[in-house]
Amino acid sequence: MASKKSSGIGSLRHIQIDKDNSYIVIAVAAAAACLIFSLVAAQSLWKQAGYNSRVISKMEGTKTTMEGNVTNLKQLEQAYQAFVQSPTNVIEGTATGQGDRDGDNSKIVLDAMPSVYDFPGTMTGLNKILNTGEFGETKISATDDELSQKSNTVSQITELPINFSGAGNVDVVQSFLQRLDNSIRPVKLSTVNFSGSSETELTVNVSGFIYYQPKKEFQVKSEVVE
Image 1 (cartoon, rainbow, N blue to C red):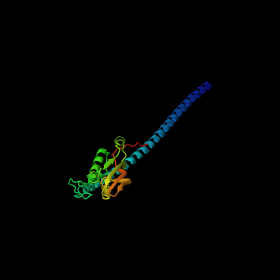
Image 2: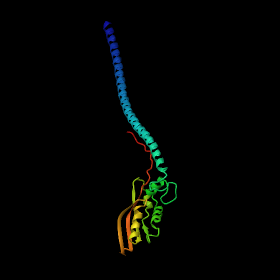
Image 3: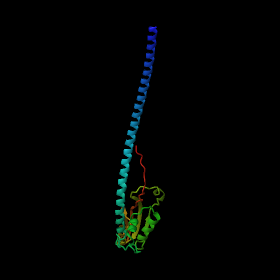
Image 4: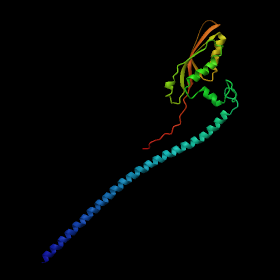
């Protein structure tokens, strides 16, 4: 009887040990799962913290740039007002007058370097300067390039080829070139050719370039932070 009883007690102990081992395995597995989850979560949080830091850095840089732009804008506005309100413009005309040399400085600057390609306006302005009757049959020729210039959005000075011709005596031809030189619209001369039989019958043919500069468009851009 004692032997059977001891055998029964041993079996109960083995069962209890197996249960304890099962609990230990479950506990270790749960701990390992928690550890793995914690590591994955920590890595994710670390990446998120780094990303947030980069975003904040970009935002701070943008804020600094905007604050600087606001300050510069105020200074530019003050300088512009002083420039425009000057009673005498940069070519010594009257700011409020209606003559050829008159107009405020903003008008003078736009006439000198327009922000849009205006072929008819350009030809009209040059004809007004040169076709005054003193240069014989003055001719101005250029190619209307409006279609291709419409797609030009780069704010860079763009040169446009143009040709002029005038006739007269030596003094008239000299005056013709002087008129081009004094034009508010900059004209860069590349070639100047003279022809004629005498000092009283000369023809001058000029090839060169005029310019315009497309206005700079203000654009708000977005940046992807990685």
